[in-house]
Amino acid sequence: MTQSAPLIALAGNPNSGKSALFNALTGARQKIANYPGVTVERKSGHFAFADGRPAELVDLPGSYSLDPTSPDEEVTRNVITGLQQGERKPDAIIIVLDAANLDNHLRFALEVIALGQPVVVALNMMDLAERDGLTLDPAKLSEALGVPVVPTVAVRRRGLEELSAALENRLLQKDSAPQPVVSKTRDHGLRKQAKLIANQVIISETAGRRWSERADSLFLHPFAGPLILFAILFVMFQAVFAWSEAPIGLIESASEWVAGTVESNMAPGFLRDFIIEGAIAGVGSVVVFLPQILILFLFILLLEASGYMTRAAFIMDRMMASVGLSGRSFIPLLSSFACAIPGIMATRSISDPGDRLTTILVAPLMTCSARLPVYAIIIGAFIPPTVVGPGIGLQGLVLFGLYVFGIVGAMIVALVLRSTVTKGPNSGFLMEMPKYQLPRMKDVLIGLWQRAWIFMRRAGTIIFAATVVLWLLLTFPKVPEDSGMSQVDYSVAGRIANVITPAVEPIGFNRDIALALIPAMAAREVAVAALATTYAIDAPDEEAEAKSLTERLQSRWSLPTALAFLAWFVFAPQCISTIAVTKRETNGWKWPMFMLAYLFALAYVAAGITYWSAVALGL
Image 1 (cartoon, rainbow, N blue to C red):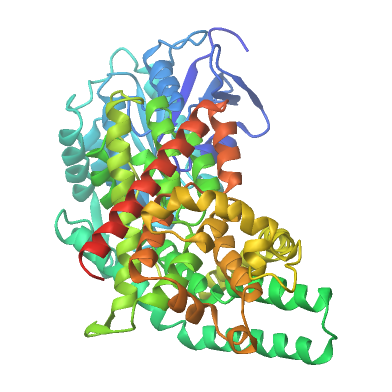
Image 2: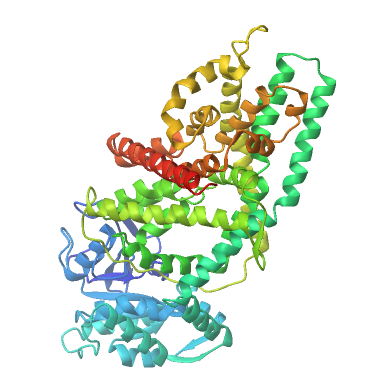
Protein backbone atom coordinates (compact mmCIF):
# COMPACT_ATOMS: atom_id res chain seq x y z
CA MET A 1 0.00 0.00 0.00
CA THR A 2 1.54 3.33 -1.03
CA GLN A 3 1.12 6.62 0.73
CA SER A 4 -0.53 8.07 -2.40
CA ALA A 5 -3.46 5.68 -2.14
CA PRO A 6 -6.48 7.61 -0.87
CA LEU A 7 -7.63 7.03 2.71
CA ILE A 8 -11.38 6.62 3.03
CA ALA A 9 -13.08 6.83 6.43
CA LEU A 10 -16.29 4.92 7.10
CA ALA A 11 -18.40 6.76 9.69
CA GLY A 12 -21.91 6.56 11.10
CA ASN A 13 -24.07 5.84 14.12
CA PRO A 14 -23.88 2.49 15.91
CA ASN A 15 -26.24 -0.09 14.37
CA SER A 16 -26.22 1.58 10.96
CA GLY A 17 -24.75 -1.46 9.18
CA LYS A 18 -21.37 0.22 8.95
CA SER A 19 -19.36 -2.89 9.81
CA ALA A 20 -21.33 -4.97 7.30
CA LEU A 21 -20.51 -2.42 4.59
CA PHE A 22 -16.84 -2.43 5.60
CA ASN A 23 -16.71 -6.23 5.35
CA ALA A 24 -18.48 -6.19 2.00
CA LEU A 25 -16.01 -3.67 0.53
CA THR A 26 -12.78 -5.11 1.93
CA GLY A 27 -13.50 -8.82 2.24
CA ALA A 28 -10.59 -10.62 3.92
CA ARG A 29 -8.17 -7.77 3.27
CA GLN A 30 -8.45 -6.42 6.81
CA LYS A 31 -6.07 -5.47 9.61
CA ILE A 32 -7.03 -4.87 13.25
CA ALA A 33 -4.90 -2.92 15.73
CA ASN A 34 -5.34 -0.08 18.22
CA TYR A 35 -5.05 3.64 17.58
CA PRO A 36 -1.76 5.00 19.01
CA GLY A 37 -2.08 6.07 22.63
CA VAL A 38 -5.60 4.70 23.21
CA THR A 39 -7.28 1.31 23.61
CA VAL A 40 -9.86 1.98 20.89
CA GLU A 41 -9.75 -0.62 18.13
CA ARG A 42 -8.62 0.43 14.63
CA LYS A 43 -9.97 -1.69 11.79
CA SER A 44 -8.65 -1.01 8.29
CA GLY A 45 -8.74 -2.80 4.97
CA HIS A 46 -8.02 -2.47 1.24
CA PHE A 47 -10.39 -2.22 -1.69
CA ALA A 48 -10.05 -1.21 -5.31
CA PHE A 49 -11.95 1.15 -7.59
CA ALA A 50 -13.35 -0.02 -10.93
CA ASP A 51 -10.11 0.89 -12.75
CA GLY A 52 -8.03 -1.11 -10.26
CA ARG A 53 -6.65 1.83 -8.29
CA PRO A 54 -6.22 0.83 -4.64
CA ALA A 55 -7.63 2.64 -1.63
CA GLU A 56 -7.48 2.14 2.13
CA LEU A 57 -10.72 2.02 4.10
CA VAL A 58 -10.77 2.63 7.86
CA ASP A 59 -13.87 1.69 9.86
CA LEU A 60 -14.34 4.36 12.52
CA PRO A 61 -16.05 3.61 15.85
CA GLY A 62 -19.79 4.25 15.84
CA SER A 63 -20.60 7.79 16.93
CA TYR A 64 -23.67 9.91 17.62
CA SER A 65 -21.94 13.27 17.57
CA LEU A 66 -18.70 15.13 16.85
CA ASP A 67 -18.93 16.40 20.44
CA PRO A 68 -17.44 13.26 22.01
CA THR A 69 -18.82 11.70 25.20
CA SER A 70 -16.66 8.54 25.08
CA PRO A 71 -13.17 7.50 23.91
CA ASP A 72 -14.71 5.89 20.81
CA GLU A 73 -16.46 9.11 19.78
CA GLU A 74 -13.31 11.12 20.50
CA VAL A 75 -11.28 8.93 18.12
CA THR A 76 -13.93 9.28 15.42
CA ARG A 77 -13.93 13.08 15.79
CA ASN A 78 -10.12 13.25 15.75
CA VAL A 79 -9.72 11.02 12.68
CA ILE A 80 -12.31 12.95 10.67
CA THR A 81 -10.74 16.31 11.56
CA GLY A 82 -7.14 15.11 11.16
CA LEU A 83 -6.23 15.45 14.85
CA GLN A 84 -5.71 11.75 15.66
CA GLN A 85 -2.15 10.87 16.60
CA GLY A 86 -0.48 8.65 14.00
CA GLU A 87 -3.41 8.91 11.57
CA ARG A 88 -3.55 11.07 8.44
CA LYS A 89 -6.67 13.01 7.59
CA PRO A 90 -9.06 11.05 5.33
CA ASP A 91 -9.28 12.04 1.68
CA ALA A 92 -13.01 11.28 1.71
CA ILE A 93 -15.68 10.06 4.11
CA ILE A 94 -18.46 7.52 3.57
CA ILE A 95 -21.31 8.24 5.97
CA VAL A 96 -23.52 5.20 6.55
CA LEU A 97 -27.19 5.88 7.37
CA ASP A 98 -29.87 3.45 8.48
CA ALA A 99 -32.65 4.07 5.98
CA ALA A 100 -35.31 2.93 8.45
CA ASN A 101 -34.11 5.37 11.13
CA LEU A 102 -33.16 8.31 9.00
CA ASP A 103 -34.02 11.29 11.22
CA ASN A 104 -31.87 10.00 14.10
CA HIS A 105 -28.88 9.10 11.91
CA LEU A 106 -28.98 12.31 9.88
CA ARG A 107 -27.97 14.40 12.90
CA PHE A 108 -24.42 13.00 12.87
CA ALA A 109 -24.29 13.13 9.05
CA LEU A 110 -25.17 16.82 9.08
CA GLU A 111 -22.31 17.54 11.49
CA VAL A 112 -19.78 15.72 9.30
CA ILE A 113 -21.02 17.21 6.02
CA ALA A 114 -20.81 20.71 7.52
CA LEU A 115 -17.03 20.27 7.83
CA GLY A 116 -16.78 20.65 4.05
CA GLN A 117 -14.79 17.48 3.35
CA PRO A 118 -15.55 15.14 0.40
CA VAL A 119 -18.50 13.01 1.53
CA VAL A 120 -20.58 10.22 0.01
CA VAL A 121 -23.65 8.94 1.85
CA ALA A 122 -24.48 5.22 1.83
CA LEU A 123 -28.22 4.93 2.48
CA ASN A 124 -27.96 1.46 3.94
CA MET A 125 -30.47 -1.28 4.88
CA MET A 126 -32.92 -0.14 2.23
CA ASP A 127 -34.44 -3.62 2.19
CA LEU A 128 -35.38 -3.42 5.88
CA ALA A 129 -36.89 0.04 5.37
CA GLU A 130 -39.03 -1.29 2.49
CA ARG A 131 -40.01 -4.31 4.58
CA ASP A 132 -41.21 -1.93 7.28
CA GLY A 133 -43.32 -0.04 4.75
CA LEU A 134 -41.01 2.95 4.15
CA THR A 135 -40.14 4.20 0.66
CA LEU A 136 -37.45 6.90 0.34
CA ASP A 137 -36.19 9.10 -2.49
CA PRO A 138 -32.34 9.04 -2.51
CA ALA A 139 -32.23 11.81 -5.12
CA LYS A 140 -34.16 14.19 -2.86
CA LEU A 141 -31.87 13.31 0.04
CA SER A 142 -28.82 14.05 -2.13
CA GLU A 143 -30.31 17.40 -3.10
CA ALA A 144 -31.08 18.28 0.51
CA LEU A 145 -27.60 17.37 1.75
CA GLY A 146 -25.60 18.57 -1.26
CA VAL A 147 -23.60 15.33 -1.45
CA PRO A 148 -23.98 12.07 -3.43
CA VAL A 149 -26.37 9.52 -1.88
CA VAL A 150 -26.21 5.85 -2.89
CA PRO A 151 -28.82 3.29 -1.70
CA THR A 152 -27.14 0.09 -0.44
CA VAL A 153 -27.87 -3.24 1.18
CA ALA A 154 -24.45 -4.18 2.52
CA VAL A 155 -25.30 -7.71 3.67
CA ARG A 156 -26.49 -8.55 0.13
CA ARG A 157 -23.69 -6.57 -1.58
CA ARG A 158 -26.25 -4.39 -3.35
CA GLY A 159 -25.16 -0.88 -4.40
CA LEU A 160 -21.43 -1.45 -3.81
CA GLU A 161 -20.39 -0.72 -7.39
CA GLU A 162 -22.48 2.46 -7.46
CA LEU A 163 -21.00 3.52 -4.10
CA SER A 164 -17.45 2.93 -5.34
CA ALA A 165 -18.12 4.92 -8.52
CA ALA A 166 -19.66 7.81 -6.57
CA LEU A 167 -16.69 7.83 -4.21
CA GLU A 168 -14.17 7.79 -7.05
CA ASN A 169 -15.99 10.62 -8.79
CA ARG A 170 -16.10 12.61 -5.55
CA LEU A 171 -12.33 12.24 -5.10
CA LEU A 172 -11.69 13.39 -8.68
CA GLN A 173 -13.87 16.48 -8.12
CA LYS A 174 -12.39 17.15 -4.69
CA ASP A 175 -11.31 20.71 -5.43
CA SER A 176 -14.09 21.72 -7.82
CA ALA A 177 -17.08 20.10 -6.12
CA PRO A 178 -19.75 22.53 -4.82
CA GLN A 179 -19.96 23.14 -1.10
CA PRO A 180 -22.66 21.20 0.78
CA VAL A 181 -25.88 23.03 1.52
CA VAL A 182 -25.88 21.96 5.18
CA SER A 183 -25.53 24.68 7.79
CA LYS A 184 -23.26 24.38 10.81
CA THR A 185 -26.14 24.41 13.28
CA ARG A 186 -25.62 22.44 16.49
CA ASP A 187 -27.68 20.40 18.94
CA HIS A 188 -31.40 21.30 18.87
CA GLY A 189 -31.13 22.96 15.47
CA LEU A 190 -29.47 19.87 14.01
CA ARG A 191 -32.24 17.63 15.28
CA LYS A 192 -34.90 19.86 13.75
CA GLN A 193 -33.01 20.02 10.46
CA ALA A 194 -32.57 16.22 10.41
CA LYS A 195 -36.27 15.68 11.07
CA LEU A 196 -37.23 18.13 8.32
CA ILE A 197 -34.96 16.49 5.73
CA ALA A 198 -36.14 12.99 6.69
CA ASN A 199 -39.77 14.01 6.17
CA GLN A 200 -38.94 15.56 2.78
CA VAL A 201 -37.42 12.39 1.32
CA ILE A 202 -40.23 10.01 2.36
CA ILE A 203 -42.24 8.98 -0.69
CA SER A 204 -44.65 6.77 1.21
CA GLU A 205 -44.98 4.92 4.49
CA THR A 206 -47.47 2.45 5.83
CA ALA A 207 -50.02 3.14 8.54
CA GLY A 208 -47.92 1.04 10.91
CA ARG A 209 -44.98 3.43 10.73
CA ARG A 210 -47.23 6.44 11.14
CA TRP A 211 -48.83 4.73 14.14
CA SER A 212 -45.37 4.31 15.67
CA GLU A 213 -44.70 8.05 15.34
CA ARG A 214 -48.07 8.90 16.88
CA ALA A 215 -47.42 6.47 19.73
CA ASP A 216 -44.06 8.12 20.43
CA SER A 217 -45.68 11.53 20.46
CA LEU A 218 -47.74 10.23 23.40
CA PHE A 219 -45.29 7.92 25.20
CA LEU A 220 -42.41 10.41 24.97
CA HIS A 221 -44.50 13.48 25.79
CA PRO A 222 -42.85 15.53 28.59
CA PHE A 223 -46.01 15.38 30.73
CA ALA A 224 -47.98 12.34 29.56
CA GLY A 225 -44.90 10.10 29.12
CA PRO A 226 -43.90 9.93 32.81
CA LEU A 227 -47.54 9.46 33.85
CA ILE A 228 -47.92 6.48 31.49
CA LEU A 229 -44.63 4.99 32.72
CA PHE A 230 -45.66 5.21 36.36
CA ALA A 231 -49.13 3.85 35.51
CA ILE A 232 -47.50 0.79 33.89
CA LEU A 233 -45.27 0.28 36.92
CA PHE A 234 -48.29 0.68 39.21
CA VAL A 235 -50.22 -2.05 37.35
CA MET A 236 -47.12 -4.27 37.43
CA PHE A 237 -46.83 -4.14 41.21
CA GLN A 238 -50.55 -4.65 41.68
CA ALA A 239 -50.24 -7.80 39.55
CA VAL A 240 -47.31 -9.08 41.63
CA PHE A 241 -49.71 -9.60 44.55
CA ALA A 242 -53.04 -10.14 42.79
CA TRP A 243 -51.85 -12.79 40.29
CA SER A 244 -49.51 -14.68 42.61
CA GLU A 245 -51.95 -15.57 45.37
CA ALA A 246 -53.07 -18.91 43.91
CA PRO A 247 -49.63 -20.30 42.89
CA ILE A 248 -48.12 -19.22 46.23
CA GLY A 249 -50.87 -21.16 47.99
CA LEU A 250 -50.00 -24.27 45.95
CA ILE A 251 -46.29 -23.99 46.82
CA GLU A 252 -47.09 -23.48 50.51
CA SER A 253 -49.36 -26.54 50.50
CA ALA A 254 -46.66 -28.58 48.78
CA SER A 255 -44.08 -27.50 51.38
CA GLU A 256 -46.44 -28.41 54.24
CA TRP A 257 -47.13 -31.80 52.63
CA VAL A 258 -43.40 -32.53 52.23
CA ALA A 259 -42.70 -31.47 55.84
CA GLY A 260 -45.58 -33.61 57.09
CA THR A 261 -44.40 -36.61 55.06
CA VAL A 262 -40.87 -36.30 56.43
CA GLU A 263 -42.17 -35.97 59.99
CA SER A 264 -44.39 -39.04 59.60
CA ASN A 265 -41.79 -41.29 58.02
CA MET A 266 -38.59 -40.36 59.85
CA ALA A 267 -37.62 -41.01 63.43
CA PRO A 268 -37.08 -37.92 65.60
CA GLY A 269 -33.49 -36.76 65.58
CA PHE A 270 -30.86 -34.51 64.09
CA LEU A 271 -31.50 -35.38 60.42
CA ARG A 272 -35.28 -34.94 60.63
CA ASP A 273 -34.90 -31.60 62.43
CA PHE A 274 -32.41 -30.48 59.81
CA ILE A 275 -34.73 -31.31 56.91
CA ILE A 276 -37.87 -29.80 58.48
CA GLU A 277 -36.43 -26.78 60.35
CA GLY A 278 -33.45 -26.04 58.12
CA ALA A 279 -34.16 -27.06 54.51
CA ILE A 280 -37.96 -26.94 54.26
CA ALA A 281 -38.64 -24.06 56.67
CA GLY A 282 -35.64 -22.02 55.49
CA VAL A 283 -35.31 -22.57 51.74
CA GLY A 284 -39.02 -23.28 51.31
CA SER A 285 -39.90 -19.89 52.78
CA VAL A 286 -37.95 -18.26 49.92
CA VAL A 287 -39.01 -20.55 47.06
CA VAL A 288 -42.63 -19.64 47.79
CA PHE A 289 -41.99 -16.20 46.26
CA LEU A 290 -41.00 -17.58 42.84
CA PRO A 291 -44.45 -16.71 41.32
CA GLN A 292 -44.10 -13.06 42.33
CA ILE A 293 -40.60 -12.83 40.86
CA LEU A 294 -41.76 -14.41 37.58
CA ILE A 295 -44.73 -12.02 37.34
CA LEU A 296 -42.37 -9.08 37.83
CA PHE A 297 -40.03 -10.34 35.11
CA LEU A 298 -42.93 -11.15 32.79
CA PHE A 299 -43.74 -7.43 32.70
CA ILE A 300 -40.08 -6.48 32.26
CA LEU A 301 -39.57 -8.92 29.38
CA LEU A 302 -42.76 -7.78 27.64
CA LEU A 303 -41.73 -4.13 27.94
CA GLU A 304 -38.25 -4.88 26.56
CA ALA A 305 -39.52 -6.99 23.66
CA SER A 306 -42.17 -4.44 22.66
CA GLY A 307 -39.63 -1.61 22.35
CA TYR A 308 -41.11 0.40 25.23
CA MET A 309 -38.21 -0.09 27.66
CA THR A 310 -35.95 2.21 25.63
CA ARG A 311 -38.71 4.85 25.73
CA ALA A 312 -38.74 4.45 29.52
CA ALA A 313 -34.99 5.08 29.46
CA PHE A 314 -35.55 8.29 27.51
CA ILE A 315 -38.17 9.46 30.02
CA MET A 316 -35.94 8.65 33.00
CA ASP A 317 -32.99 10.37 31.33
CA ARG A 318 -34.61 13.74 32.01
CA MET A 319 -34.89 12.92 35.70
CA MET A 320 -31.29 11.73 35.92
CA ALA A 321 -29.97 14.81 34.16
CA SER A 322 -31.49 16.90 36.95
CA VAL A 323 -29.28 15.11 39.51
CA GLY A 324 -26.08 15.29 37.48
CA LEU A 325 -26.16 11.88 35.78
CA SER A 326 -26.22 11.28 32.03
CA GLY A 327 -28.51 8.97 30.13
CA ARG A 328 -25.64 6.49 29.88
CA SER A 329 -26.29 5.67 33.53
CA PHE A 330 -29.84 4.50 32.89
CA ILE A 331 -29.07 1.08 31.39
CA PRO A 332 -26.75 0.05 34.28
CA LEU A 333 -29.33 1.28 36.80
CA LEU A 334 -32.11 -0.51 34.93
CA SER A 335 -30.04 -3.73 34.98
CA SER A 336 -29.70 -3.29 38.75
CA PHE A 337 -33.44 -3.87 39.18
CA ALA A 338 -32.67 -7.51 38.33
CA CYS A 339 -29.31 -7.63 40.13
CA ALA A 340 -26.78 -4.95 41.04
CA ILE A 341 -23.82 -7.08 39.89
CA PRO A 342 -24.47 -6.90 36.10
CA GLY A 343 -25.62 -3.30 36.62
CA ILE A 344 -22.28 -2.29 38.14
CA MET A 345 -20.37 -4.17 35.43
CA ALA A 346 -22.42 -2.37 32.75
CA THR A 347 -21.01 0.98 33.93
CA ARG A 348 -17.93 0.21 31.84
CA SER A 349 -19.75 1.87 28.93
CA ILE A 350 -19.75 5.22 30.80
CA SER A 351 -16.72 7.26 29.76
CA ASP A 352 -16.93 10.05 32.34
CA PRO A 353 -15.20 8.85 35.56
CA GLY A 354 -17.49 10.86 37.85
CA ASP A 355 -20.63 9.58 36.12
CA ARG A 356 -19.37 6.00 36.27
CA LEU A 357 -18.39 6.11 39.94
CA THR A 358 -21.68 7.75 40.93
CA THR A 359 -23.65 5.11 39.03
CA ILE A 360 -21.71 2.32 40.75
CA LEU A 361 -22.34 3.83 44.18
CA VAL A 362 -26.11 4.25 43.69
CA ALA A 363 -26.75 0.98 41.82
CA PRO A 364 -27.43 -0.93 45.10
CA LEU A 365 -30.32 1.45 45.78
CA MET A 366 -32.24 0.07 42.81
CA THR A 367 -34.70 -2.50 44.16
CA CYS A 368 -33.24 -5.80 42.95
CA SER A 369 -35.31 -8.97 42.68
CA ALA A 370 -33.64 -10.35 45.83
CA ARG A 371 -35.52 -7.75 47.89
CA LEU A 372 -38.90 -8.93 46.62
CA PRO A 373 -39.23 -11.94 48.99
CA VAL A 374 -38.43 -9.66 51.95
CA TYR A 375 -40.96 -7.06 50.84
CA ALA A 376 -43.58 -9.67 50.03
CA ILE A 377 -43.47 -11.53 53.36
CA ILE A 378 -43.69 -8.32 55.42
CA ILE A 379 -46.40 -6.75 53.26
CA GLY A 380 -48.34 -10.01 53.26
CA ALA A 381 -48.14 -10.23 57.06
CA PHE A 382 -48.87 -6.62 58.05
CA ILE A 383 -50.62 -4.86 55.15
CA PRO A 384 -54.23 -6.03 54.73
CA PRO A 385 -55.38 -6.97 51.21
CA THR A 386 -57.73 -4.00 51.21
CA VAL A 387 -59.15 -2.70 47.93
CA VAL A 388 -58.59 1.06 47.85
CA GLY A 389 -59.95 1.66 44.37
CA PRO A 390 -61.09 -0.10 41.17
CA GLY A 391 -58.48 -2.82 40.65
CA ILE A 392 -56.15 -1.19 43.21
CA GLY A 393 -55.01 -3.17 46.24
CA LEU A 394 -53.28 -1.68 49.25
CA GLN A 395 -50.55 -4.35 49.19
CA GLY A 396 -49.56 -3.58 45.61
CA LEU A 397 -49.68 0.11 46.39
CA VAL A 398 -47.20 -0.33 49.25
CA LEU A 399 -44.87 -2.42 47.05
CA PHE A 400 -45.00 0.26 44.36
CA GLY A 401 -44.17 2.87 46.99
CA LEU A 402 -41.10 0.92 48.12
CA TYR A 403 -39.75 0.81 44.57
CA VAL A 404 -40.41 4.53 44.13
CA PHE A 405 -38.79 5.19 47.52
CA GLY A 406 -35.63 3.41 46.34
CA ILE A 407 -35.51 5.34 43.05
CA VAL A 408 -36.03 8.71 44.75
CA GLY A 409 -33.39 7.80 47.33
CA ALA A 410 -30.93 6.92 44.56
CA MET A 411 -31.57 10.22 42.79
CA ILE A 412 -31.04 12.22 45.98
CA VAL A 413 -27.82 10.33 46.75
CA ALA A 414 -26.61 10.86 43.16
CA LEU A 415 -27.27 14.60 43.46
CA VAL A 416 -25.29 14.78 46.72
CA LEU A 417 -22.41 12.70 45.32
CA ARG A 418 -22.21 14.72 42.08
CA SER A 419 -22.07 17.88 44.17
CA THR A 420 -19.31 16.56 46.47
CA VAL A 421 -17.06 13.51 46.11
CA THR A 422 -17.74 12.87 42.38
CA LYS A 423 -18.17 16.49 41.36
CA GLY A 424 -17.78 17.28 37.66
CA PRO A 425 -19.68 18.33 34.51
CA ASN A 426 -22.33 15.94 33.24
CA SER A 427 -22.15 14.78 29.63
CA GLY A 428 -24.87 14.54 27.00
CA PHE A 429 -26.40 11.36 25.67
CA LEU A 430 -28.26 10.24 22.57
CA MET A 431 -30.28 7.04 22.35
CA GLU A 432 -31.81 5.29 19.37
CA MET A 433 -35.44 4.21 19.58
CA PRO A 434 -36.21 0.70 18.33
CA LYS A 435 -39.43 0.10 16.45
CA TYR A 436 -42.52 -1.11 18.30
CA GLN A 437 -43.29 -4.79 17.83
CA LEU A 438 -45.38 -7.56 19.32
CA PRO A 439 -43.31 -9.64 21.75
CA ARG A 440 -42.59 -13.22 20.68
CA MET A 441 -44.05 -15.38 23.42
CA LYS A 442 -41.40 -18.04 22.82
CA ASP A 443 -38.67 -15.53 23.69
CA VAL A 444 -40.62 -14.32 26.73
CA LEU A 445 -41.11 -17.88 28.01
CA ILE A 446 -37.41 -18.64 27.53
CA GLY A 447 -36.57 -15.50 29.51
CA LEU A 448 -38.93 -16.54 32.32
CA TRP A 449 -37.44 -20.04 32.39
CA GLN A 450 -33.94 -18.58 32.66
CA ARG A 451 -35.01 -16.29 35.50
CA ALA A 452 -36.72 -19.20 37.32
CA TRP A 453 -33.60 -21.35 36.92
CA ILE A 454 -31.36 -18.58 38.26
CA PHE A 455 -33.63 -18.10 41.28
CA MET A 456 -33.92 -21.83 42.03
CA ARG A 457 -30.18 -22.32 41.61
CA ARG A 458 -29.60 -19.44 44.02
CA ALA A 459 -32.08 -21.00 46.47
CA GLY A 460 -30.31 -24.34 46.17
CA THR A 461 -26.80 -22.96 46.69
CA ILE A 462 -26.27 -19.61 48.45
CA ILE A 463 -29.56 -19.56 50.37
CA PHE A 464 -29.37 -23.26 51.25
CA ALA A 465 -25.75 -22.97 52.45
CA ALA A 466 -26.48 -19.88 54.55
CA THR A 467 -29.59 -21.53 56.00
CA VAL A 468 -27.66 -24.69 56.93
CA VAL A 469 -24.95 -22.67 58.69
CA LEU A 470 -27.56 -20.61 60.54
CA TRP A 471 -29.52 -23.74 61.53
CA LEU A 472 -26.38 -25.33 62.97
CA LEU A 473 -25.56 -22.14 64.89
CA LEU A 474 -29.14 -22.03 66.19
CA THR A 475 -29.19 -25.73 67.12
CA PHE A 476 -25.95 -25.93 69.08
CA PRO A 477 -25.21 -26.03 71.89
CA LYS A 478 -28.42 -27.73 73.01
CA VAL A 479 -30.24 -25.96 75.79
CA PRO A 480 -30.32 -28.03 79.00
CA GLU A 481 -33.71 -29.51 79.80
CA ASP A 482 -33.89 -27.77 83.19
CA SER A 483 -32.96 -24.37 81.72
CA GLY A 484 -35.59 -21.67 81.37
CA MET A 485 -33.88 -20.27 78.24
CA SER A 486 -35.13 -20.85 74.75
CA GLN A 487 -32.99 -22.82 72.30
CA VAL A 488 -32.39 -19.70 70.18
CA ASP A 489 -31.15 -17.63 73.14
CA TYR A 490 -28.87 -20.47 74.32
CA SER A 491 -27.40 -21.15 70.85
CA VAL A 492 -24.26 -19.60 69.32
CA ALA A 493 -26.37 -17.60 66.87
CA GLY A 494 -28.63 -16.33 69.64
CA ARG A 495 -25.71 -15.15 71.74
CA ILE A 496 -24.26 -13.27 68.72
CA ALA A 497 -27.68 -11.71 68.07
CA ASN A 498 -28.00 -10.64 71.70
CA VAL A 499 -24.75 -8.67 71.34
CA ILE A 500 -26.07 -6.87 68.26
CA THR A 501 -29.62 -6.28 69.53
CA PRO A 502 -28.85 -3.20 71.71
CA ALA A 503 -27.50 -1.41 68.64
CA VAL A 504 -30.72 -1.95 66.64
CA GLU A 505 -33.30 -1.67 69.41
CA PRO A 506 -33.51 2.16 69.04
CA ILE A 507 -34.90 1.69 65.50
CA GLY A 508 -37.50 -0.86 66.64
CA PHE A 509 -35.66 -4.09 65.78
CA ASN A 510 -35.76 -7.15 68.05
CA ARG A 511 -33.39 -10.07 68.55
CA ASP A 512 -34.92 -12.06 65.68
CA ILE A 513 -34.26 -9.23 63.22
CA ALA A 514 -30.71 -8.79 64.51
CA LEU A 515 -30.22 -12.50 63.87
CA ALA A 516 -31.56 -12.24 60.31
CA LEU A 517 -29.50 -9.22 59.29
CA ILE A 518 -26.14 -11.02 59.48
CA PRO A 519 -26.77 -13.90 57.00
CA ALA A 520 -28.72 -11.48 54.78
CA MET A 521 -25.34 -10.07 53.74
CA ALA A 522 -24.81 -13.30 51.76
CA ALA A 523 -28.08 -12.75 49.88
CA ARG A 524 -31.10 -10.59 50.62
CA GLU A 525 -33.53 -13.49 50.47
CA VAL A 526 -31.68 -15.24 53.31
CA ALA A 527 -33.31 -12.77 55.72
CA VAL A 528 -36.64 -14.53 55.10
CA ALA A 529 -35.03 -17.98 55.38
CA ALA A 530 -33.28 -16.91 58.61
CA LEU A 531 -36.54 -15.75 60.19
CA ALA A 532 -38.34 -18.94 59.15
CA THR A 533 -35.55 -21.15 60.54
CA THR A 534 -35.37 -19.17 63.78
CA TYR A 535 -39.10 -19.42 64.43
CA ALA A 536 -39.19 -23.10 63.44
CA ILE A 537 -36.52 -23.89 66.08
CA ASP A 538 -38.00 -21.53 68.67
CA ALA A 539 -41.52 -22.95 68.35
CA PRO A 540 -42.70 -23.78 71.92
CA ASP A 541 -45.11 -26.53 70.95
CA GLU A 542 -46.54 -28.57 68.09
CA GLU A 543 -49.28 -26.02 67.46
CA ALA A 544 -46.74 -23.23 66.94
CA GLU A 545 -44.76 -25.44 64.57
CA ALA A 546 -47.81 -25.60 62.34
CA LYS A 547 -48.01 -21.82 62.04
CA SER A 548 -46.87 -20.13 58.85
CA LEU A 549 -44.09 -17.57 58.89
CA THR A 550 -46.67 -14.85 58.27
CA GLU A 551 -48.60 -15.84 61.40
CA ARG A 552 -45.44 -15.96 63.49
CA LEU A 553 -44.41 -12.48 62.35
CA GLN A 554 -47.84 -11.11 63.18
CA SER A 555 -47.65 -12.49 66.71
CA ARG A 556 -44.09 -11.30 67.44
CA TRP A 557 -43.69 -7.99 65.58
CA SER A 558 -45.50 -4.68 65.86
CA LEU A 559 -46.55 -2.74 62.76
CA PRO A 560 -43.95 0.04 63.39
CA THR A 561 -41.23 -2.65 63.56
CA ALA A 562 -42.41 -4.20 60.30
CA LEU A 563 -42.43 -0.82 58.53
CA ALA A 564 -38.96 -0.05 59.88
CA PHE A 565 -37.74 -3.41 58.57
CA LEU A 566 -39.03 -2.52 55.09
CA ALA A 567 -37.33 0.89 55.25
CA TRP A 568 -34.06 -0.79 56.28
CA PHE A 569 -34.06 -3.06 53.24
CA VAL A 570 -34.71 -0.19 50.85
CA PHE A 571 -31.24 1.16 51.67
CA ALA A 572 -29.21 -1.62 53.31
CA PRO A 573 -26.09 -2.81 51.42
CA GLN A 574 -26.58 -5.66 49.03
CA CYS A 575 -24.90 -9.06 49.08
CA ILE A 576 -21.20 -9.65 49.54
CA SER A 577 -20.88 -10.39 45.80
CA THR A 578 -21.97 -6.82 45.03
CA ILE A 579 -19.26 -5.44 47.32
CA ALA A 580 -16.67 -7.70 45.63
CA VAL A 581 -17.69 -6.51 42.14
CA THR A 582 -17.52 -2.88 43.29
CA LYS A 583 -14.00 -3.51 44.59
CA ARG A 584 -12.98 -4.98 41.24
CA GLU A 585 -14.55 -2.20 39.16
CA THR A 586 -13.04 0.61 41.29
CA ASN A 587 -9.61 -1.05 41.73
CA GLY A 588 -9.53 -0.90 45.51
CA TRP A 589 -11.41 -1.05 48.80
CA LYS A 590 -11.88 2.70 49.24
CA TRP A 591 -15.18 3.02 47.38
CA PRO A 592 -16.70 -0.33 48.47
CA MET A 593 -16.08 0.69 52.09
CA PHE A 594 -17.59 4.12 51.38
CA MET A 595 -20.60 2.38 49.81
CA LEU A 596 -21.05 0.11 52.84
CA ALA A 597 -20.78 3.01 55.27
CA TYR A 598 -23.26 5.35 53.58
CA LEU A 599 -25.78 2.59 52.83
CA PHE A 600 -25.75 1.29 56.42
CA ALA A 601 -26.10 4.87 57.69
CA LEU A 602 -29.05 5.54 55.34
CA ALA A 603 -30.71 2.24 56.29
CA TYR A 604 -30.36 2.95 60.02
CA VAL A 605 -31.67 6.51 59.73
CA ALA A 606 -34.56 5.53 57.42
CA ALA A 607 -35.60 2.65 59.69
CA GLY A 608 -35.40 4.87 62.78
CA ILE A 609 -37.45 7.67 61.24
CA THR A 610 -40.04 5.17 60.00
CA TYR A 611 -40.31 3.41 63.36
CA TRP A 612 -40.65 6.49 65.54
CA SER A 613 -43.01 8.18 63.07
CA ALA A 614 -45.25 5.10 63.10
CA VAL A 615 -45.17 4.99 66.91
CA ALA A 616 -46.01 8.69 67.12
CA LEU A 617 -48.97 8.14 64.80
CA GLY A 618 -50.23 5.34 67.02
CA LEU A 619 -49.89 2.60 64.39
